[in-house]
Amino acid sequence: MLSDGRDLEAHARVEPHSHPRGQLLWAAEGVLRVASDVSVWIVPPSHAVWIAGGVLHHVVTETPARIRNLYVDPFFPIRDGDGNGAMLLLTPLMREIILRLTEESSSVDVDSRRRLSLVAIDEIRQLESAPLCLPAGKDARLRRLTGFMIRNPGEQRALNELAKIAGSSLRTMERLCKAETGMTFRQWRSHLRLLNAIERLGQGESSTTIAHSLGFRSVSSFVAAFRQKFGCPPQKFLK
Image (cartoon, rainbow, N blue to C red; front, side):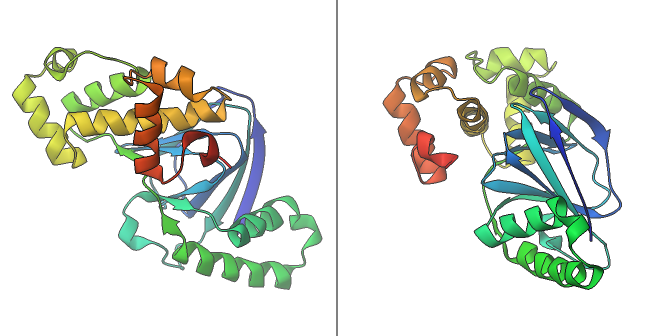
């Protein structure tokens, strides 16, 4: 198993690239946005994203970030059922393994590192997946719309107006959204806003500021939606 780590400033961008090995990408501190051709993942420190080997992706840091990576040889089949990748909820054990392999590699002898790497592989296989992925779709018209919305998560216009941005009709965009994301546009936009809220929480913004900027009717409606999706109130999520 290979590993590395780097510290990046806020709003840094790692240009599109891929790895022959599967990659477990984690920010020990900070919030990341990771995007492949078909998905966008928001990665807080409580989670890591698994990216299958050969998948083109890029990374943007929303805050200063301590990025740590593990790379697993394709000889070890891991999470094949997750397609191109998955968001994973880290266990305390997995966090300590990542830190050990990435930050103390010089002090770990070869045999100990090999044994620890095998434990890491077993742990990655068992990590619970989490709903922090946003499908972006493959159709060019849908990707124009989802790309615009990802850049402007507080956008309030109705789909019939937004479809014009993509050069599409309302009916076609409704069909594409449901077929390629598995969600209606209303559901997709709600999920986008909640994922964007995680980014803003990582930047230290209050629930009040986030609720108003993302178009929720009230702070209480934002908190209720967040709790329903992620199982805890916003200000406790990153903890």
